[in-house]
Image (cartoon, rainbow, N blue to C red; front, side):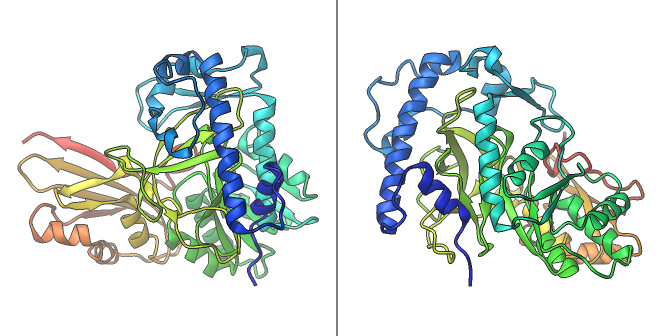
Length: 448
């Protein structure tokens, strides 16, 4: 039997909804709550945020009467925040408890700064407290493999949320030395791990290499980056555990949604965030079931409200009801980022997820780096650098065979738009160690 997501009861409590009513009554009540909170957020932002005062100056002061009206509001983008972070601040600077600075990999521009008040941080702790009920019970232990040494960091906030569940936490931090992490986690007796996909994969292989016969690990929660299904399957096989996906980003307040026991999409934090899926090119709303770009609006945050913020993430709302029985929306697990699409030919798109599912399915592969050189008037070149587990015996042909199963690569090689990929095996070790940057395909462009 699949238990209903704990977010269901939590959100009903937050919107003060009677739990004995029907699903349709709940949906109507939630949408009415969201509309009210959207209007409150717009009023708060317009009154207190210099950026939104300018952006909303041509939007009528009258409150919206339907959620569909909200699509009239312009989008907020990451470059808006990077260009004027203090313009988003909607409280006095003395009321700010935490500032997170974000730089994208390879960026030479301004960093994004995200501001949180104590009340904003409490919203995140509350979500972690409720959302983790799917994975752990009172008296159990969680190893947190995320940054947590600094107060109010993600690992610290998660630990504080878990303490309300009477769950003990080991805030280990990102996995730099897998063997050391194995020793610490096995000695602690963790029932659950929370970490970064690539790092947890490396940890699992090191666990096997250490020949630890018994494991207390029952559940794993993967976060901070796109989670390849192939990695989830490998962890399930190596540990015999369930693997859950979490969706969030700093701009959301770290938590956005988490899978239930059905393991089929995130239930969303709908009392604190309003989600939309829009066409990446036109910006128009996508109907449920259609893949587009994830956009969100904060409903309860005071320090730095965000309105229709474009995440760049690729996903869709699942139209079918969840097997767990909740009426909450489900978002399909994020497939990657729109900026990560590579057009090998006008009608041939390559996604990072294509490479992930093909390569992480290979036994012993721990990480890889992909570089594509686009050359005007000539075939593109692709290079894959492989990092494999100790004792693994992957060969060049194994990698090429996996790559050739990707339709976009196979088609582009056949039409001479792409040369056969070159493969090297790295002895440098892992590349994704801090967990602060998103994995991506590196693209270079050469002149004719």
